[in-house]
Image (cartoon, rainbow, N blue to C red; front, side, top):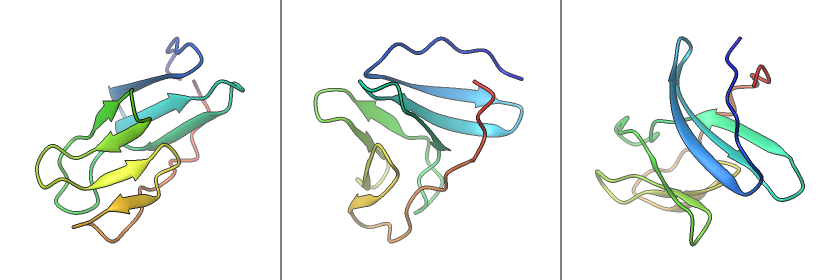
Length: 86
C-alpha cells in the first residue's frame, strides 16, 4: 500500500511499484487514479493546474482529469487503475 497525501484540487505523478500513476483529488474529495503515461507513445504526463488537465510533453495529447481525450494525436483515454490504496 502506498500512502500519499494529496489535498483537494491537487494532482501528482507517482512512480510506484505498479507503475507511473496520475492522481488527482477534486474539491469534493473524489480521487482519480489513472495510468500516468500517455496512451500515444508512453511519455509521462504533466499536470496543468490552471486548466485541470493532464498534458503529454512529447506530442501534445491532452486528457481531462478523468482520463478522457481532449486533444489528439492519442485516440485512447487513460486507463483507470482501479487502485484505491491511497
